[in-house]
Length: 426
Image 1 (cartoon, rainbow, N blue to C red):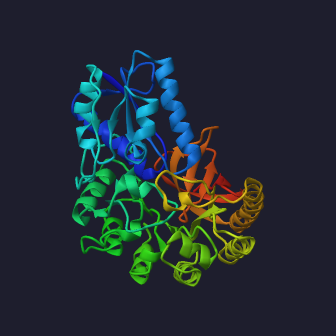
Image 2: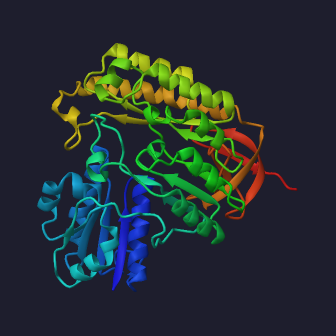
């Protein structure tokens, strides 16, 4: 039997796909790289944004039309968030809920034999130290916890991932050690909110970062997204841990809005003053740190004044990376009961912020032109060459390099999203 897996969305969901593949391989079920070669297709869905929802819904419908003889299984967040729509568009599809990955083999086998199997619901099963099939072995994703402590009004993902469930530091370190021993050069610690790690178990993110970074080997650690309200509990120790030379000088700290009023409406649990204070501390202690932020444009209660405050915040903190999303209602989210702002207003604000975003990020990147950077080569470029990462996790285009190695380059040009370099010969 042969299975094709297609994953959408975040790093965490990508890791779920790797676990499904690992479980199947362990049960002597082959994983293939093309739909045409597969007997069973698994669509590992994401549901965080409406465009992604539309994409996965279209994919599920298209697969049923184009491959009527192949069996289809739906995994990921859609299974828990919107089972009614899923049942409507794929009545003959089986389901694997994001907490039921250990049952992947039996679901695939039953579905292949003509059954419609639907395994859903929450579980405390650990996702650390389980079978995984990674893409290339160089970048290894470790899910350090699942679920969150938040109650954000715009979010539907929390209905799929459930309450916080942190995995033991000892297990995470053991998986990282094994991955590094097998050739991994980048360890990604991921979660819906890495800053919430240990709040349910008594352990701390700062301790975890230090223990992973102190492992033997030549590698880098990337720490995933942190919710500002939870980083407040351990900010000084997290900064201390991230000063380790093996940890990328990179922090993903979503703010969503520059307005305290809107943040309160979103139930974010922090203020702009607290957010700026966190950013200032990181920049003071780790001067080269790259800041990534998330912004939602056009939340239903956002006025022109609120939007202008967001613009001013971005100009003040000067992020290296800005993720922009237009607000859209999501299934089950509290804010979906509110009236959306007019589309033309949303479009105008989004366009304006996109221009600001490109200007800020390009100016930040241009400061690195003519500097010498030690970079880690992590993947081949889609248009040739290679993609490497600076110590601040900024992508760098390199003409010629060996995957998994550290090399010295000179930055020759900068865009809003990446750097271009030339190799320095030793």
